[in-house]
Length: 287
Ligand SMILES: Nc1ncnc2c1ncn2[C@@H]1O[C@H](COP(=O)(O)OP(=O)(O)OP(=O)(O)O)[C@@H](O)[C@H]1O
Ligand SMILES: O=P(O)(O)OC[C@H]1O[C@H](OP(=O)(O)OP(=O)(O)O)[C@H](O)[C@@H]1O
Ligand SMILES: [Mg+2]
Image 1 (cartoon, rainbow, N blue to C red):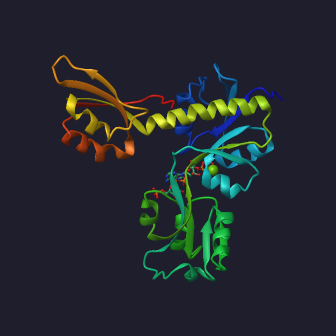
Image 2: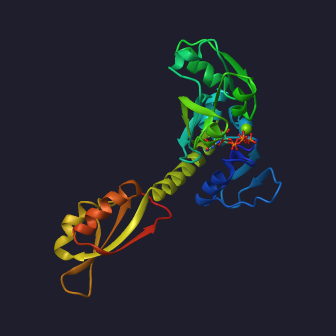
Image 3: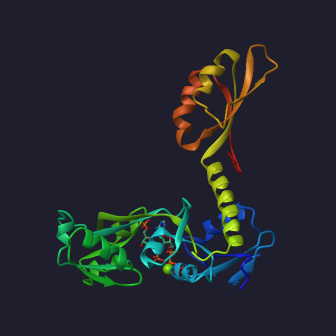
């Protein structure tokens, strides 16, 4: 087996596929993923991409058949495989929750005592029930979990929730959240030194892509005497760039603004005298 390449397993088709491929491409790794191809070589990085069912990925990574994998944290935790979670990827955010029939008067986790709960996540549910001292019957099914209470298969469900619309349309309400999930990168514990070096390069690229997404490049015009005040809201990477305008007493200020603080700070910046504000996406950001 070639110890000098990274074999990266991603979901073949499903909710993680598009974002996983996009992330790899944003990291500058090029490959040809012709339809139906289950394995492809990168053309400009020592990597090979494997397209698999997501449930199989933690096992492949544990065995070292794949060196890296992108899966939901829920799948990785449920699998209980001996792998390292090396990075959180920020997409496919969802939660694993318990739902009961909407008309059920739910008074807390002890209500589940003696009940049956349908789930695809028996391990995570079992751990949660045990931690809460509740004995319930876990009924493992592999999909369409939310149908279970309405057909008398179980009293409750434990499944992935995002918007909550699947629970709602099946007459259920969310009563407990047992796990918060997002896509994660998992790695084998048996990487060669070369593979570890390649993983470090890849993580550096992923962090630069994520950092860029969390920030915007901002350009604005302001009176020169307002620069100090405006700069307080734009800590930037080190300090803002100030360029004189052709109009006496005015300048152009360039900086970086955090996406989360954007709307709150933009108002303060306007009040401090800024005008002609442009906000531009950043492709990569290296601190
Ligand atoms: N509604 C949702 N919103 C956000 N993320 C979700 C949602 N449903 C699932 N996910 C996340 O996406 C992952 C993949 O979901 P998907 O439905 O594609 O899995 P799957 O049907 O098991 O796929 P596969 O065919 O590869 O086994 C889940 O494990 C979870 O982490
Ligand atoms: O809270 P919501 O936004 O409604 O999302 C939750 C639903 O999404 C997932 O199913 P998915 O749509 O992927 O179908 P599948 O699991 O049957 O493939 C999950 O299994 C839930 O049923
Ligand atoms: Mg699956």
